[in-house]
Length: 41
Image 1 (spheres, helix red, strand yellow):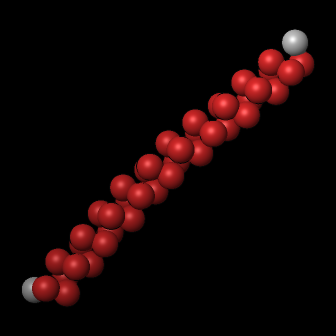
Image 2 (image 1 turned 120 degrees about the vertical axis):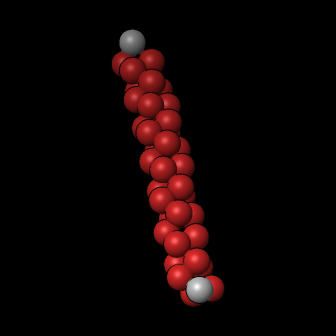
C-alpha cells in the first residue's frame, strides 16, 4: 500500500510540475511578445 501511495504522489508531483511549467512558458511567451512589440514600434 505504501509503495502505491509513493508512486501516486510521485506521478502527481510530476503532473503539477508539468502544468506549472506550461503556465510559466505561456506567461514567458506572452511577456516576450509584448517586449518584442514594444521594441518594434
